[in-house]
Image (cartoon, rainbow, N blue to C red; front, side, top):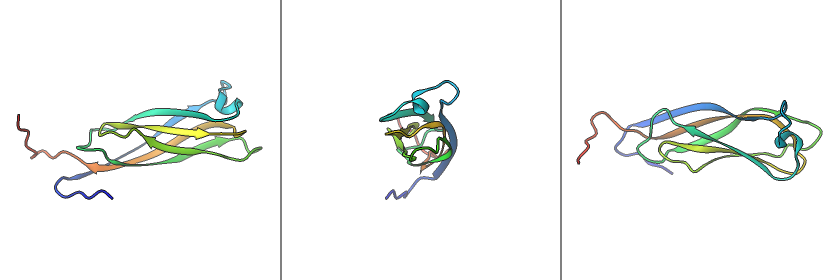
Length: 116
């Protein structure tokens, strides 16, 4: 649990298309086995410390002839951003994925002191 005691809390959110591979025959659509894609997300402004990040699939375009196997995760979270990672495996075929994300954390305040 994160507890914020002295600084304002900021919430940033957005969406990102991680890949679209149907039209060009990419291996998320044509391949089998373990496959992964990642995309760097940059926050609109840096947080004071590493924020909590929630990530989810907001659009998926998938083949329905096999089981849907998928994992999304926020990795390498920093005050400036994170990597959105999508994984699938076996014979699952994914044409396109868009993710939605929300970051919550401490933000700077205009009255913060900077001592050098």
